[in-house]
Amino acid sequence: MRISELAERSGVPVATIKYYLREKVLPEGERSSPTQASYGEAHVQRLGVIRALVDAGVGISGVRKVVALLEDPPENPYDLLGAANAAVTPVVPEGIDLTDANILLTRMGGSPEACFPDQVAAVAQALSALDRAGFTVPPAVMDAYLEHLSALAEAELAATPDASIEDAVRYVVLGTALVEPLILALRRVAEQVAASRRFGAPGD
Image (cartoon, rainbow, N blue to C red):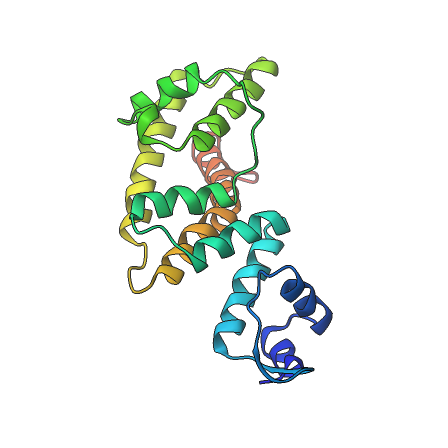
């Protein structure tokens, strides 16, 4: 298909497609002449991944990291998971204290050596923000976080597609970028449901 057809199929404007081509996050089409190229279904799928990441707030540098994974994925599923998550994890300043984050990892049954440093640093940064605000997560609540997040992680890993690397990367990356806002929204709804049960809904 020509670039105009690719734009129509994908819902991405031609100018944006050309930008992704210049940034090399979208592969070149098959050249039929110096000014013409043909695009296929793989380009439609890749644009779907790119747009989903962009819509979720991932910048072009993060998109490049994801594309690099798609082009040259790690053979080890553990490395694939870590690299895919790292691609959409904000950079944390160096030198942050990891002590409390490492304690939480141990309580989850893991160890600092078993986790990617940028992910541990992200936990440490979140804990630091809580500390600056003078907010402490009650122990029983933290216990619930660790227990249920561990169960969630097991379920997500069990559901990771194994038909192709691209499917696996797409699942992990988009699951991070797009599902986390869903989890947050569901948490807020769950709190409202719990509050209505405990205190009664308005009008009851």
